[in-house]
Image 1 (tube, chains in turn brown, blue):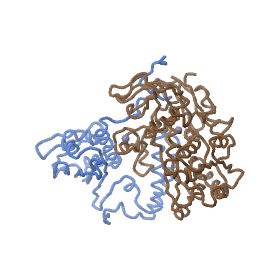
Image 2 (cartoon, protein in one colour; image 1 turned 90 degrees about the vertical axis):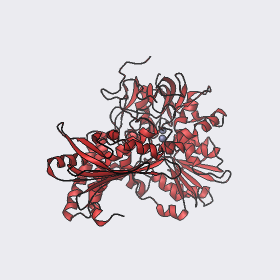
Image 3 (cartoon, chains in turn orange, yellow; image 1 turned 45 degrees about the vertical axis):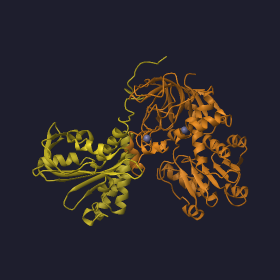
Image 4 (spheres, chains in turn brown, orange; image 1 turned 30 degrees about the horizontal axis):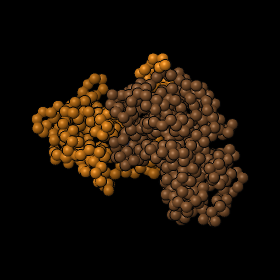
Length: 392
Length: 241
Ligand SMILES: [Zn+2]
Ligand SMILES: [Zn+2]
């Protein structure tokens, strides 16, 4: 089959590789009908996530049709149309039982690597996202092996198009969880979203669905700001305005009640903090550039929430903890418990409350993936979200 | 809560600190170079830990691997895991000494001799084996199991497993303490080396494998799946269509 393969930092190719097969009785194999490139895939392209190996198949946002199931699989059958959460969860451990699916104790076979880096514990495995996260082959391919087939895959039985349900695999639940983590008081709270990439777009719309009185989206890319405006959000271009001042003004000096950092470890930005981050990141002295997170803390209202769906990988420098303490902020973060949100969010799509396909700007076959990874990273050609058809 | 004699290697001498600083930097550099990505990551992480401990003057290897070495040369390894099962079944699994090698992978074989005594064997280099006799020192079903080697063992060693209920119906907290004391002599040196290969990491891996066996009934894996690496994947058939 054909698959998008990591060949090294800044090197992504399309190769013919062996078809996947059932390795454990709880596996399924899915024929992929649609798959997307995620903003977090760009951290792999740029080499910021350790433990990638040449030949790893990328991609964690995919859906398709079940073509094979292992002997122990009970809920899925051949022919089912499914979306597959980007994270793997066993469904039986204590975190899974509590709905904390991304914190699964059992789904990462390489737990020792994550334990070495992350305080002696490991979260669950992820599709196509390095060996620290399990080394599972990704879904930017014609077929994919799906472990824990009775736990992750979610059946789509309505006639919604792939475009409308594909983002249930990651960016819609991720934006939604980021907004839910803010505990928005409907009709009262103002929510600011840093980053108008795909996750930021879904976070802004989710904040609106959860009743935010006002939503403000901050970015520097005009077409991304325009997309956010289309939902009724106010926008701030941080290259044209002093972002902290603009947020003060927009909120009567209080600051947004909650701030979502939908940027993560590769934030742009300016000022001495941003320059220091970039220099140190290049020298591998720090992992993460955190301009957006600093702005989030500095702008957030007293008693507010800083919610972080953006991915962080390591250590950060010069975090304004004094400001966070003085204002009594709450920090919420972490990978998305995708499985938990699927029934509710599918319901919102079926009822017409949201059509997630608004975010798609590019559609292509697998062979164009390498160019589109770069266009997406460099924010060229108006690229916001790429959907690939592995059979085109 | 550690006493002085148990503290991990206590303070380093200035010369040791310089040496460990250099070792840490070297490991970190090796980690940044080529090789298998897993090795690169572990080397880099080890390098950072070692270098950091050179800076603080704490003995590096002992703390990095959850090992304590007492003044008497006795090595202690311990770890803990919570498993979503009741204590009785878990205890029974450990009390079945003959099946211990499935839980503790450094063991090759345990033969039960009578109610209390058993013969434990580990693999040694060049196809040889080292054995010793051990005795059950405590058996409290569902709570605690302890054993110790009998006099004459190449390596004096002992172990205990504690089983206690986790709060909030989360199953059982399993705590393992292992100690061993190399006695010198060729066999002792060999066994010390085998047991000394990352014993903290080995115990961790053993406990996670046990947890998954108990909770899932199998070990999750990504081995054998497809990739762009030569020889990857089981299926080599061309396209499915
Ligand atoms: Zn994603
Ligand atoms: Zn789990």
